[in-house]
Image 1 (cartoon, helix red, strand yellow):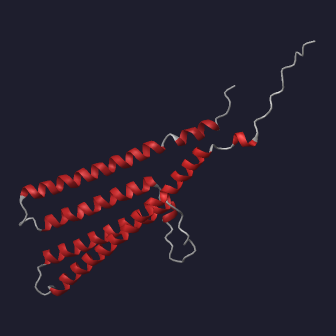
Image 2 (cartoon, one colour; image 1 turned 60 degrees about the vertical axis):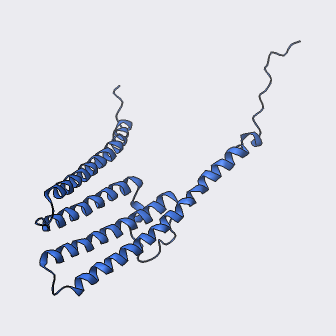
Image 3 (tube, helix red, strand yellow; image 1 turned 180 degrees about the horizontal axis):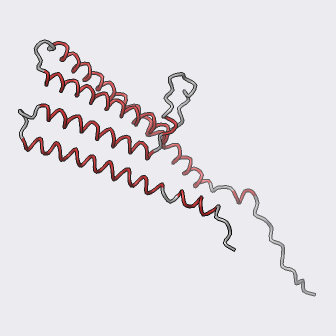
Length: 198
């Protein structure tokens, strides 16, 4: 007499469901490789030191020659200092937001001086802030060139304006692309709450 019932299928053992050793090892290796970026962000602090030195050098030059400098030279010197401050702020944004997004969460959130923006800056925000800072610094250079328009060749001034406009257009296009990438997420929620037509 033949048994018409098919043999029972035994469920796979827990050992068979585990991630293979090689796959798990590679995934752990890839995950821990993010710490290779930590020295890069630490190295940006050296850039902050250089910016501080150049800022103090510019400030000392203005103070030392304040009685002999013309207004245009003072104006350009102050613009250079503002440019250095913007560059330092940009470095801080990349350091903090990049480290928190790609390496590890900062364990200093209970500090009273912890900036609120750090936990809310995504990779897309870093790109936009980076481009906005570049546009702002480019505008400062163009303004400094216009202050010294009598001593700068027209070709150099034209290149300065053209490069600034290129940065502006690039920033606008980058912002538009980010907005277009985020746009499809909104209609999906509306479709899920539509009433049944029948």
